[in-house]
Image 1 (cartoon, rainbow, N blue to C red):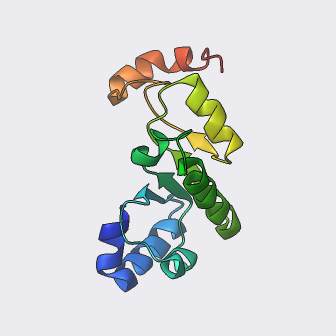
Image 2 (cartoon, rainbow, N blue to C red):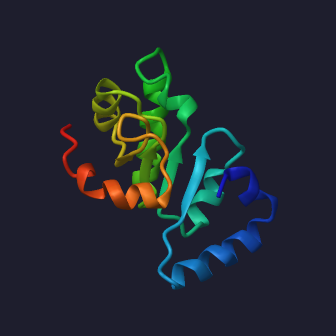
Length: 131
């Protein structure tokens, strides 16, 4: 779920999230940093992941953006939430993002988007990625 959808009706979103958590479903707040999230809202939500928007990840290493990413990862850690860096495209970005505290990663460095059948066919080859 994105920040903007969440905030339209926070009470309903919170109720739905809590019901999903009871079912064992993990919840990720997508495109974090591009909307209008309130830290107060974040502290009240039963989320598991904050997905840091690709727009920040693509600028990692540039002036100021490392600080933004570090602030997001630090805040997430203090809330007991993991971070996912969206749009990782190369090994240098991956190393930098690890050093900035990101927990998990997704992007073209690992794979282009694939459908379920292709994933099933290629699952074993994913274990061969050397990082």
